[in-house]
Length: 516
Ligand code: HEM
Image (tube, rainbow, N blue to C red; front, side):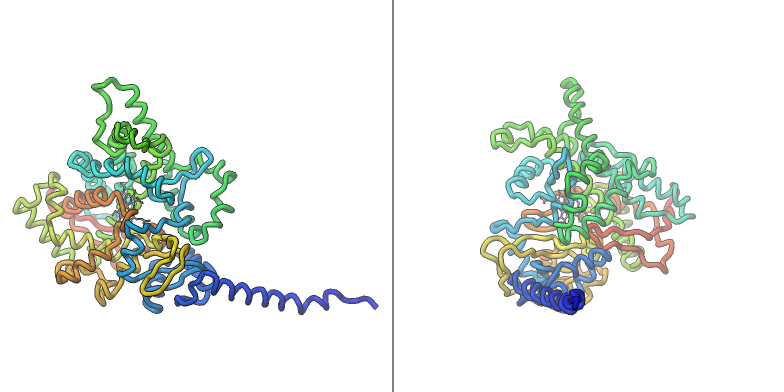
């Protein structure tokens, strides 16, 4: 009699699968030593929760909701804990016991000559990062000085004239999200090499760089939730042999560096490009200094390119997002708008702000309500929407009273901590600049301590002063020249909850306030 092998094995296969699944679940649940930390069931055994949240571009809001349900520590993936406790802040972001960045960041690296090119933002190795920072640190400070402010002025003027031109003096809606992206990208050309790329002037996405960053933002936000996936997709020699040469942002960075190096090499002493006048000039100058050589920190060509590349990506996206938030939130909150307008008008009338277009960043930074509006807009809508991942070092750590083993991925999502109701009040989700002016001393100190708009600790933002310079240069001039309002006030803007929390669908009408 023939034996039907299929019939014999058929009931066995589901049982084997079930047992294997149960064994994996128990292993995954306990193996990372985090079973005492609460979180959604799926996040306790896999990375599916966070991949799903990133895939749907909803990480900021889902991450906030989890903390409101489970408390200050939430397990959001295998071996990963999201933190929302101000006391854990100095532990994770301290200078003494550094929690290094995770592989999450490596997936954002461009490739150059067949290898990933770590930047000052993505670098995980402490020594490598320190070398970049030791040389470049000085270049970030000079780029926000008065010389740079003067170089930025024509770009501000151009933006205002484009708002008027495209809006036909207040008669047509303007795609302001696009204009601000063009402004912010050109601003990085000025910061790096004193020259805009031409986004604003020509109203084009130069070399498709903005589209490339948008695509990279989507890819990175999802894939970085399980970095091993990157190796099988774009993080390998085969994919990069096709893609490397077609990376428009890398190509822009290479072109900036090559052009400057050629100018330096060819010009006679008197015609040499203004050395300290922009980021790259100052960087090259510092890199040639005896001090840098003596300390063995001299940067190689590709490291210089990586710094210019990092600035271009980070500086464009963050400032574009910040400016969009400020404009949109002002347009939505007319009482705030009116109060800010009064402050600016009085400042122009009294001379506290010089007459446009000559007001300075130093003058604008003294206006309390303008400052509160900017800080509050960046708090309500942080530019980064994912966790700033860090690895718990040897010996583990105590976070929110719980032991977390070494090797665990931990971190703060700016959206979570900046919407923390214990720190910012029960109305933490509301845009209310007054909270920064009304808070008593203790509360204000805590609000500032938890303000990770620009990151924190050893990996804090190097371009903060540059970003603030752009915002403070633009906002008073814009509000002096135009009244602005949403073209479609009945519709919400669109926000992408990825790494860069990009916004769109916020067209506005810009009505000239004075005779031009
Ligand atoms: C409103 C504007 C900006 C905001 C809100 C912002 C925010 C941030 C945040 C949150 C981080 C930390 C990221 C992390 O821990 O993973 C960061 C890092 C960084 N940002 Fe910015 N940024 C802004 C503008 C800029 C500009 C204009 C530049 C360049 C000119 C820049 C260059 C950098 C660099 C180089 C780092 C990495 C620092 C390091 O790891 O050593 N940022 N930024």
